[in-house]
Length: 156
Image 1 (tube, one colour):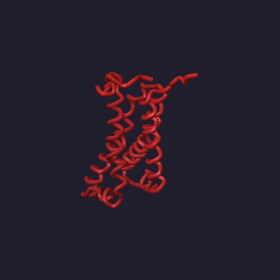
Image 2: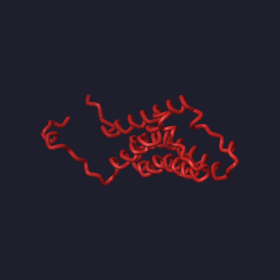
Image 3: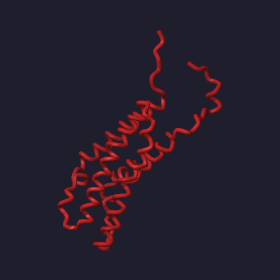
Image 4: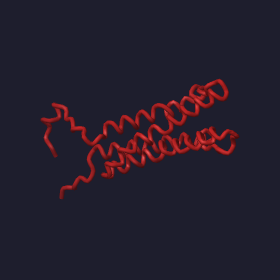
């Protein structure tokens, strides 16, 4: 009896990438929770409070919602793909807005955390770009490209 294939190879790859994103980001969060779990009420500035709420939404979107969207895509709900840019960009955009506000209020950017803790280069720069690349490669209208050497291989 031949086993029927339920998922395409891309579905397996997408779900694996989602799982790796989820695990890696949450390992970073659990290692450095003070960088992520910030009380917005701890600051007197209303603008900073709003920015802290936006950045909290951003890291939750990138750490959890983006992988869940990839799982949904792999399960056949390809419409989930359209939400990936929001999940990918909310975090870095909120960080950029926060950096600009800190510069306006204090006269200095707070970017030395990227040097002190280089793992944040992954969470703040590399991972959002990675999610956008996945979003781009998973687009619905993209034709399947088969390398010419692979066309001659026997099909299962």
